[in-house]
Amino acid sequence: MINPKQMQTVAAGRARTYAVLSALYAAPPSADLTEMIREGGLVQDERGPFGTAANDLTFFFREAASGTQLENELAAEHTRLFVLPTGVVPHEAFYADENQRLGGRVTVAVQQYYEEAAARLTGACLELPDHMGVELEFMKFLCDIEEQFWKEPNWAGLQKCLSFQNGFLTEHLLRWYRPLCERIIDETDLDMYRALARLTIAFLEDEQKDVPELTHEIHSEGRTPCVTES
Image 1 (spheres, rainbow, N blue to C red):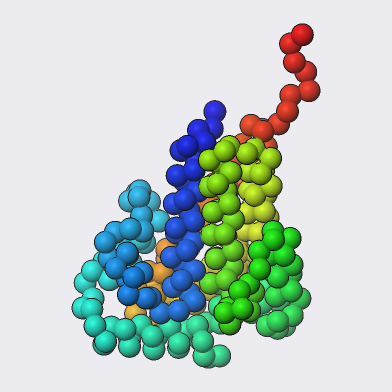
Image 2: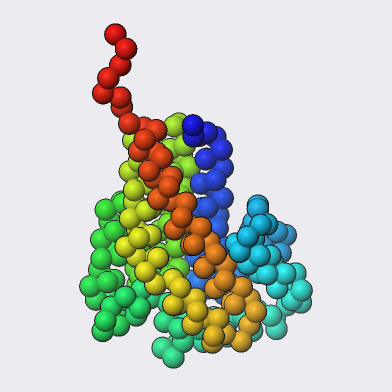
């Protein structure tokens, strides 16, 4: 039987990981984010590929000397990888559209998914909806909602929320994260971004396995029986 309190903690941890990944794809790491990672706030279970990748990212920030030089290196590499057109192009359309057309049908499909989940991009967001940072932030948004539904618990809400998560992973994120991350590993000059790519792969591999299983479990748990004892 599912333990709602335990699953609430799991959802919160997943949301935190999505938030960290999203932030690192969206911009060079802020001072607060750097400090959080340096203090080991990224991983709870150190076993397996996810724990190894999280430890590698933590190790980078612990070993790197703080200061302007590090900030400049990270900002320059972020720009080279994720902003310049000669970089890895962190947009789903580049990998999932046969014409690699940014802003086309793939981007529109992602935007429609956000709208169906009642999620809106803020006016401050300068990226297209299919940017890796935005797609990861959308998953963080869904995990935050899931956490609240576990708190009640609200089985109908959990069914809908997890179906959205499973659908978005299957139809979007899981279709293109690996080729993007492999390009990052091949092209980056900094261990920090190699660790980010490996962490993304390890985490989304876990999600690919765990979210469909949980979705199925929730549908079974929340199903209203058709026959009861008289």
